[in-house]
Length: 171
Image (tube, rainbow, N blue to C red; front, side):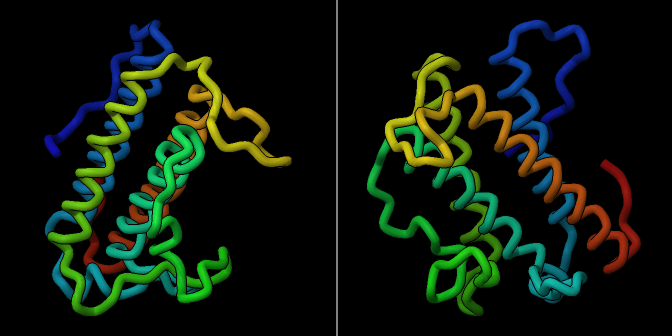
């Protein structure tokens, strides 16, 4: 994934704004991981215990759950692969020791490419194929905004972890 700048303040199209910021945060996430050692990628800097590598895998699966599983209604066999053995929300994010950063990054980039295609093929007003009491017919626009807040929050958390780990600061 190339380094993606923040969308310009003159942007007026909602689709371009949402997808532009989503790519910006995807790129920011990868920038913050670049240069971390293997130890840094697998070391937690927070009391909850997640590691930068686990965060990358988690955000990959967040996109899969929202765009492929909920919006398209696909059956996704590894829907909760970023969670512990029980697949519960309270289980920690996890990356098995034998899984490499390159593998997790490749999965993230493939997921981002698939997500871009899903969004390109739909209207922002289209609603999700899967519904439940909490999310009855969720619009694509809402899903994209939800993904943006998820990325913004986690990339901000990664800022702090990275600074505490090796002093790196910046965009």
